[in-house]
Length: 113
Image: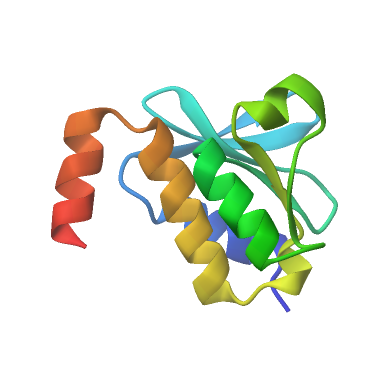
């Protein structure tokens, strides 16, 4: 089962990712933009493309779901990471990172992957 340390390692392995506090949780950012947050619960909130969010929520019911209201309609997605393996969570985290990273950085990362 994944732990908070695993989530942190996955997020910080991405190019130029940084950890910063965000209210009562931890945020992971690239160039100042949040791509994921994590609190004490076994869940993370990721900034996904709304279409990816929809498809992933259908593929992983009860594990991936939109945040309620406005934020969810704009791609913010709750991921119950206890229901995922490290490879799947890493893939979701990369999607969130690419979604908010500057275009040149995201392009270089995708081409190098």
